[in-house]
Image (cartoon, rainbow, N blue to C red; front, side, top):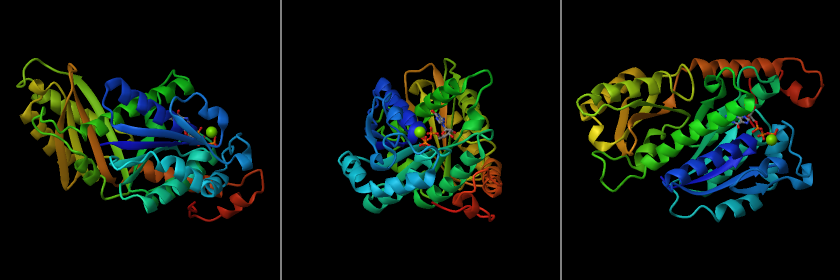
Length: 358
Ligand SMILES: Nc1nc2c(ncn2[C@@H]2O[C@H](COP(=O)(O)OP(=O)(O)OP(=O)(O)O)[C@@H](O)[C@H]2O)c(=O)[nH]1
Ligand SMILES: [Mg+2]
């Protein structure tokens, strides 16, 4: 699926940058255009994609320092200019717009809902958000920012694909190394999904097209993505189990958000050398996925690669009953109600048990 990417805030920009690098390295050409938006000049400098600095009159290129309300105001005030810069990149070929962002800070958290709302008003194509949840050991402010932002984004975007930083942290890694690895892993997953949704030349036994990605996400709300790959055996027959193993681990241990298995809809894409992909394995895996996710619809297809591995990419649309998401909103509400040292209006505004939208 041809896509226009917009990274908002620092994490958003870095993730968009990684996605473009992956797409370019593999030669898929799914990303039509990419741009990073930020209030902080220094965070835009290391990126190789085009950038737009916003709010210069308010924060002079120094960022909003975690203030997501200020970021929302800035995005709103600069929206015409942003729309001009972004709009020229959204050609008729584009099948979707994806905003990437980390929810715990200011710029991405506050700016993304405003931008998503505007883009949805203007364009017919779906606007998806790739949203990174802060880990549980980040500050109260990060939890509150993320809670409010996620609530607003899920009400606004066509679908919100959630990535849980907690689930993807590894021990013995610095924060920077960890972030870099997470960004690369999700660049690969999203990059594969977009590329798979473009296969039309009939090399594969059963192709996925972009409408299947769109239909899987059509219920709206939150979505998740999972991936895993396993060394393929020589013969198709032997690979019945390989396909099953890859699918199982994609869902049970490779999902972008932990502990989540039920969904309204699902898509299963099997990657690998076409003559090694077992049809029987694919069928079995689809049935298993249907049972496991209690999903009414599991779409599927292949994405041929020349890899020795067989990979399973699982996309879940309309995810439900997620302990992690519920726990996350609980924590955000608690953090919002907690007394803060600075007696600022924001804190008082949160003295109720609901999270305010943005
Ligand atoms: N996966 C991942 N998460 C990140 C990365 N950088 C930051 N985060 C997460 O994203 C959240 C937001 O951080 P930033 O993107 O730096 O914040 P920002 O949107 O630039 O906001 P301000 O700096 O306040 O303007 C953090 O709370 C982290 O949870 C990254 O490179 N990868
Ligand atoms: Mg920043």
